[in-house]
Image (cartoon, rainbow, N blue to C red):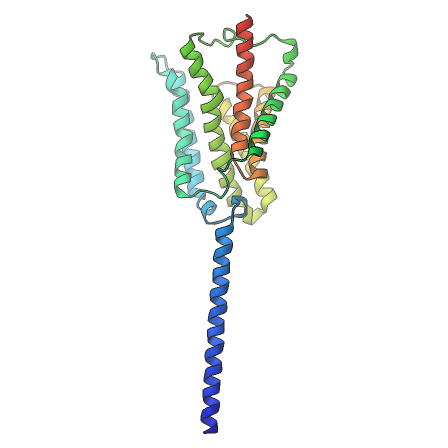
Length: 270
């Protein structure tokens, strides 16, 4: 009887231990799931940003390459009205990878907008334009005009140019370079190289590709190339520091809009 009692106690103890281990395992699993659900920053990894992998990078490279090629060909076409399709062709080439990436996953906080993003974007956009004017010795030059830039003075044409240069173009470029390209490169390199090296690499690639995009349409002077790299670098840094893309979009919009305002002032006073 005593032996049977001991065996029963041992069995009960073993069952209790097994139940405890199972409960502890479930608790750990639940805790891990909670931590994954609470991850609110793509820079720390996560399931959504991990889907922006090599396939997204390849799609981005192919889309950008096809868009630039089609855009350049259309821009140099002599057929009537075909040149006007140059920018839309580029935008489509840049937006297709963006759509593919977003369908695969939405990195946490990347597309959120905060008041701080607006303040940084506006302030740095104006500051970079002032710096560009100082470096190009704009104080000694007259205001740019629509005529000097060979722009059509028709109201419809100016409206289209304003929308393209101040809103659509900056939005498409930033959402591609600073939302897809920089995030993909960062998340692919973060674990192997560390956050700092991954961020620096992503910044250099994003800013360099931004300069190459503009150089595909017209030769760039060293000064112009450096200014474009500075704009791309600051936009990239904003995304890496805040984890959000809208500050870069706003900066680029303001940077271009300030120049259009100067063109408007110069044209009105001509």
